[in-house]
Structures are given as C-alpha cells and as structure tokens.
Amino acid sequence: MTNPIDIAAKATPAPVARRVRGLSDRAIAWIFVTPTIFLLLAINIFPLIWTVRLSFTNYAANRPGREVEWVGLRNYTRILTDAGTWENMQTTAHFLIWTIVLQVVIGFTLAWLINRKFKGNDLLTTLIVIPMMLSPAVVGNFWTFLYQPQIGLFNYVVELVTGTPASSFSMLGPGGLAKWSIIIVDTWMWTPFVMLICLAGLRSIPDYIYEAAEVDRASKWRQFWTITVPMVLPFLMLAVLFRGIENFKMFDMVVLLTGGGPGNETLLASIDLKREAFEKWRTGYSSAYAIILFVTVFGLASIYVKALNKVKER
Amino acid sequence: MSFLSGLLRLRRGPWENLATVLIALGVVMLMQPFFLWAYTWSFLVTLLGTVMFIITSHFPE
Image (cartoon, rainbow over all chains, first blue to last red; front, top):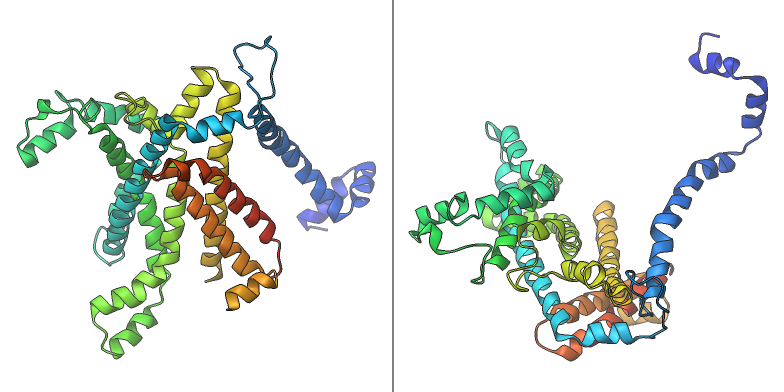
C-alpha cells in the first residue's frame, strides 16, 4: 500500500469516490471539454454569426436608438465596387508580396548558413531570433525613432553607405518611402521565424541522401537543387502561408509606425476596417468588410492546414 | 484523366485541389491592380472555394 495512487485512492472520501467511479471515460472527457466549447461558442462563434447578421444591415454602433434597416447585399456591393477599398487591398498586396519574398530569400539563406557546423552557431541563432520575440508595439515604437530623419540611426547608416544626406529623406513621411519602411520592419522582425522553419526542414534531411549523391558524383549545386530545395519546399510553403495569413491581418505594428499614412500610402485593409468601424461608426458596412477579410483568411488557413498535413505525412 | 475521374467519383484529393485553386484565384483577384471587375467578383470566388473546401474535406480519400 505504499503506491501513491493507492494512498490517494484511500484518502478520497467514500461518497466522492462512488460518484467518480460512476462516470464513464466519455462523461469525464465531456466534463473537461464543455467549458472550452462554451467559451468558444461565446467568444468566437456567436460574434461571428452576429457580424454576419450585421453585415446585411445599416446598423451604427454609436446610434443604438436608431431603427436598423435590412439592406441586403448593399454593404458587400459597395465594398466590392469601391475604388478606394480596392486601392487598400493593393497596398495590402504590396506589403504581403514584398515581405514574403524578402523573408523567404533572407530566411532561407540564413538557415542554410546556420545549418553548417561552426563555433558560436548556437549563440548566433539565439541573437538572430531576438526580433521575433519582441512585441509589435515595442518594435513599432523603436523603429519610429530609428527612422527619424535627424537623429535616427537608419538614415545615418543610409548616409554612410550611399552618401545621401540623412536629413534629406524621411522614411515615414511623404515621398513614397513609407510603403517600404513597413516592409523593412516586418522583414527585420519575422525573417528569423522563416529561418527557424527552414532550419527545421534542412535538419530533417538525412545525411545518407547527400552521401549517395556524393557517390554519384553530383556537384554541390546539383545537390542543392535536387535534394535541398525539394526537401525544404513543404516547410517553406508552410512559412509562406503562415506569414501570408499573419501579414494579411497586419495591424498593430503599422498603426504604430505610420498610422496608415502619409495620406493613404500605408493604409492596409485591416487599418481601413478599423477606421470604418470605430472612427466613421459604419458598423454594418465594416461588418461586411470584416466578413470579406475573414473568408479570405479562412480560405488561406484551409490551404495552410492542408500544407501542414502534407509536411506531417513526410 | 485521373483528376477528372477523381472528381466524378467524388474523391477528396482532386476536389480539395480544385477548391484550393479557387481560393488562390479569389485572393489574387482581390489584390490584383488591373481589373476592377476581378476585384468585384473575388469575394464570391473565394467564398465558393472555401465552402467547397469545407465540404470536400469530408469526402473519402
């Protein structure tokens, strides 16, 4: 009777023990899962259904007393025929495409270099992943200082490298550079994430494949294109989809850096949605906008899950 | 041919691939800078692809 389980069983009061013994495994599982399901319904599913309902109305949250009219598909047709919203989608696309391209190229290169054995490998990996661990609010704030034309380190480095006077340009001001400033910050922050996924892919390739290629006298270049790239590709796809979904929803970091400006230059779809919902108070319209973004993200997430399963099957 | 027969026999793989193509096409249509009509129809294409994906992911392998 020295077994701790036996001791615990003996210490349980008889009525409680009888009650617990009476429950089936299935019932116990339901007891554990029910609070989660309830929370999920209350926090995710109900608001989603409510948003779908609001998207067919002209409801305005700042006028609770006003009669709510059913407007059918009007909110959707307005959004999907509005040139301004279309432009915001293109701004989002510009941000999305460039961040993904840069993060994949730099991330894969870094992973490929880190994958080699050298002294200080672990320390370097730790240093590289630091930006990823920072809060977007912190990153947005300190990059605002780095981008200052007079005192900012970024402009100073550009002057040092290219000779362009530091105070002659502003990354966050008018002049077409703001779009690139948010891309640089996001790339700086999230390249380590892509690098880590690529590194996992590179380390999953067994050595004997390279050894067989060596026996067949395959050059390093050929080994790279016929072994490394195809074997890492599913991992890379995963990173691209994950970053794509995340950047499609990008909000906090860009709001802190540019606030969507100058003008509408960095007005991403998510920032525009927030303005429609909480500055113009067009709740019905913004609900339709949110549903459009939600369906897009949900579709991308479905592909993401499919890609994830393919990686798991390997 | 195997793709078409898979579609006809309601197999998961080809239908999921078709849904994936529709979602990707919808996202491209939403964000492209060339045709307003493509932007207008993008949501419907993405929605169709997403609903198709949800349904067809329950098809047999």
